Length: 268
Image (tube, rainbow, N blue to C red; front, side, top):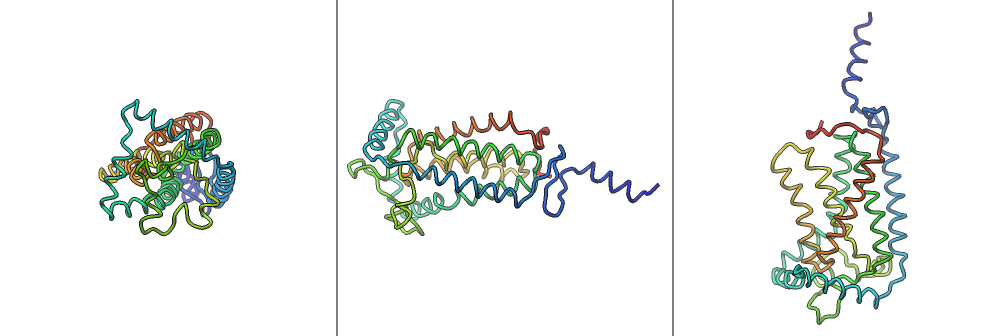
């Protein structure tokens, strides 16, 4: 009997999550290749951005929808965007920090969580990847059917300003090519909030340190606060973002087969 061969085979069976050089081997026998994942993500985001920005802008309709959202929030007694935004503007450092949070962490944290899942929890990666893709795709329905003027673009009488344009930042929606390429009225639902909650839901159960769990849970809460303080979204946009994430998770949970195993709360 070849003990070395037998022990190697046992190790492979006992550790299905161990990776080959260029892949992650799942318990179900599926393999995930990092270059395939990157190519798919880039292709998906290219298609998403193209569709998102292809909508013919209708300022009148977007403004009417904004007034409708504000009226609805007032009826629900949750219209605090104006007072929060105006109070934050008195603290310059806070607004600048919110601008950079809004403009950068949206991508940085989401990519970081995806990499973490791929490396540390590959059996759960496919389901959460599909959840994010489905939720993001659902957002396109909102962008096409319900153009919405964000608070920063409302008439001055509403009391909002575009903090990205008025305070020092690396970029602004209204600058140069960005203003021509970016769909200014793609506000409902908030993809920022959908992605932030996705990060927290995917990451928190797999963290071991209490402080790390707290930071993870605080991320979507902070994101909601930031989108309001910077006048980029309404509270209802955040609720819409959470709703599409919920639907995306339900569909992905029922349809994703790769790596379908009981959850392991500790990163392995």
